[in-house]
Image 1 (cartoon, helix red, strand yellow):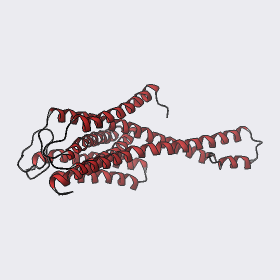
Image 2 (image 1 turned 180 degrees about the vertical axis):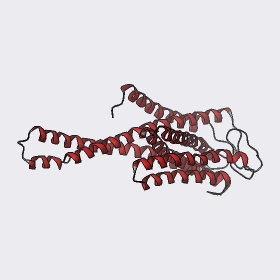
Image 3 (image 1 turned 90 degrees about the horizontal axis):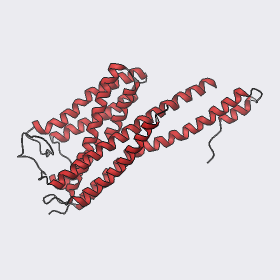
Image 4 (image 1 turned 135 degrees about the vertical axis):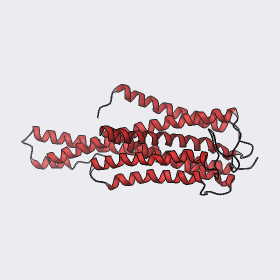
Length: 240
Length: 71
């Protein structure tokens, strides 16, 4: 597949921008913002934890839209987008879960607890991991694409649930970083957001969003390349 | 202020490793496909030369098909 030069240049520029943003965000986390008084140094995990969540959230939205678009148009490019978004989203989501668990150890005094938010985020991750297994289990390409599209639409309900759960369940101990909450009594590990914390947090979220778009774009190109190789192999086999 | 530095280091090491795996898997597949493409180029070239030059013995074409890139 031939790509236009302007698109390739945009992707190249986006890749350099991602690297630059990542370095700046790293410097901001460790040098611009100081340690939080009640949690100490471990609070710095919070920036990456939330950034990775927003990255995965964006990718799962992309997969949801791709699923709808595939069912509407039956164009393969939407299936490629869905697959690529979920594969990269799983990586970002895993960063979110694992960093959260490491933060929880000194703050909640446990690596893991079946808090409503932690439970829904685990369900979300498993739901998208099952998407990959579903794809590999169906041989007919058209059927696989159709099932994957429907599944990616249904799986998005777990993302929605993960976002709203800390706002509707009063028994959660997970802090709410942004937006309204129905409770503040049981929350463990909440802290006041200074200007520097807010700036660093917003910058890190922006960085992760740019990184996720860049990696997604590369992953889609990889998928196109794989298909191209497959068709070339088939042609050679037919000619042999 | 509590001493939680170890957990912060652990968190960032794990985060970078996972990010590295996510991005690295794409890069690794890119490289692997590039190698496959180079091999396909060779095979297609030998196929073309075999069809354009029918006097070439059949063994020559199959030898080219089995060619592997030099290390």
